[in-house]
Length: 441
Image (tube, rainbow, N blue to C red; front, side, top):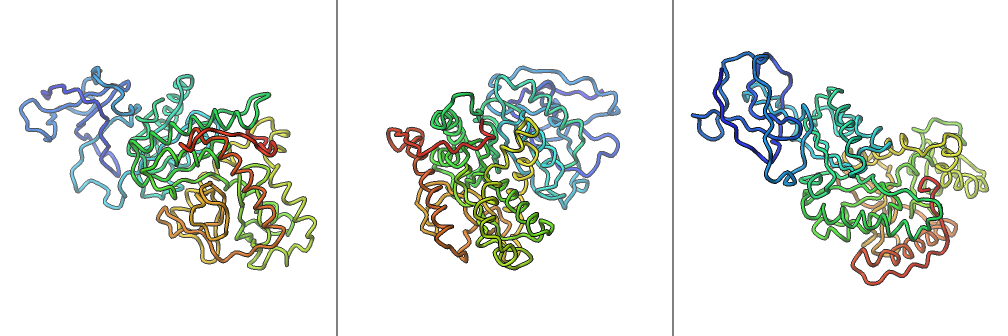
């Protein structure tokens, strides 16, 4: 039997990439029950491999060792805590460097649809290993372990690490993508101002955590509502991360708009392009049919019913989530998850020539004349490098611009409501009306 000494380690080492497990590989590091054990030959120098003369099925059970500082790094889970030491020629050279994706609200319904598709390679590609860092709450920690167990049992070849925790300063460590889904839903009798304050505190703290421990170029997609203003709060609390890296999710609204235009025109939705959602993720949002195209032609040349476009189309997109809740009794978790994947894919895949996508982004320097220093959904293009640029070749008419100014006014009012969370003084909350989306109830 091999002789080894136990050396407690407070961090989970990143697994080496491998294409398959052939025979018995030397186990360099094992973690069990979210405690760590580092095995090193007693007589060997630092960094050398363990020499084992027994078959893999004869290796004794891993021991549990208490860590002095368990909060130093998020704990890895189950099989994802195993690290295999492979010879260089056995490593899969075609795979990319491991990417770290943090997800808050990871025990919720949206994440239940999202995580498994992320782990499959559907978004980042079939040669991109991924580490999932899952953030929950004290109340959801057992459910979070259940999520990790399901990911473990799904045998995704690209999923190399899963860590779970309730402290964003641990879970967001080295995150290159942060998908901020977790937020408090609007309860009975709660005003929009109250929800802005409660959820704003969550996103202020998460912004501080990202600023402290995440990658300096982390891309952040805020899903928890009210997502535009939550994204603003988050970026204001993360001054060391470019404000341009923060997004509020309006892609589901864009997808819904494409669906309605396709249905009215009698075409499949892949014929619909250049759809923009302007403004806030609320009932003041502006689905733009003026710049949208069907089969390359302006929508207004294909759908000549202007009354339908200005009234029924706009209202259907704005209230689609509420209708779904009435019919199904639950919010749109699955389609929201799809839209998050679409939003990421739009940033890591070059935008098709002439097309664009919608995202709630920071307005400073925008070419449209929209108020500075808010997060506003606008048309974007990407080269596929995670960055984006705002589209300049769009047109406005009086109807579109009037609607844009209304949603702009709402976001400016929301900004005043959360001034105490953005470091801009005392909050003054005077919202023009309650425009909460039904899914926030």
